[in-house]
Length: 334
Ligand SMILES: *Cc1c(COP(=O)(O)O)cnc(C)c1O
Image (cartoon, rainbow, N blue to C red; front, side, top):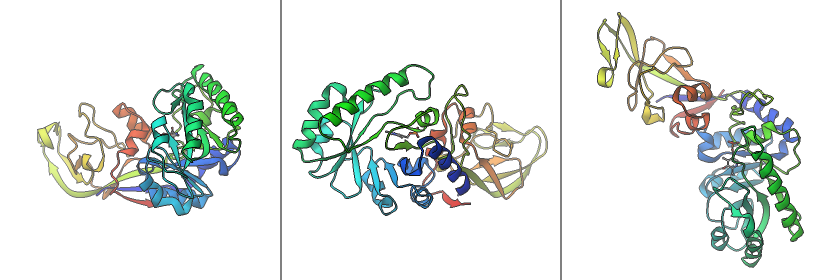
């Protein structure tokens, strides 16, 4: 199988850059959902914890269970709220409140304009009442921006909505709750920060997805993907490689088969323009389930060390490139 390395110094560099924006490490909540964006849940949780990060964010309770000893708090974004000393649960709807277990710590998510998750602004009073009636412990108020990475007024419009909600919630008697709205894009563009915590995912993994119009904070991609040679052969001019024979040799070539394919979460994609690896060697012909072919005799080839470059070739975003990498690929810290 292919292998992945995680660069610890680069990860710490990224966290330091984010800490400069928040003012302290204590205000960073590292987002570890979806196998830490494909980087490896427990490995990334341990690295983050050893750096001094105290708060984590995951999608499901079973992920929280895997990492709970490493953090003071774990926010679960999308699961039924249960009572637990360090878990808190995002409440995405009035129905979530009704289904929550008595005594559970909860953070109310308010829809300030993204219209994906969260209660409507007009439901605020009803939600606060239901939280009290249900015996839940409200520990946070949160929202999510729909276009933090776009230079427009929308971001400020959502922030304004959120500010007025905070006032309302605090006036209703919930004065000690934590307030958070920022993801990577919004904290990286922020000139001032006065909330309690940021939910940082992609930035910590080394990608600044803001367009260049914003002051760019240099982050370093921490994940590299390698494939190992399985077999080599010489092919003559006119011989074809892989399914469909899409690649045709134009000369004598010494090619090798490497152990990476769409079974590992590597895109098959189209072959009109061959994928260019980090070592500037093109993948020849189609990607198989477990194999690719490359003109090389090297034992190991770095397929990628910058998911943004890969995303450009595939017309997607860095998030998708790393998140699809299979859980079973061995990940080691360098
Ligand atoms: C995934 C997620 C984040 C992290 O977003 P990044 O862009 O990766 O920093 C923050 N908040 C919520 C609610 C999320 O779902």
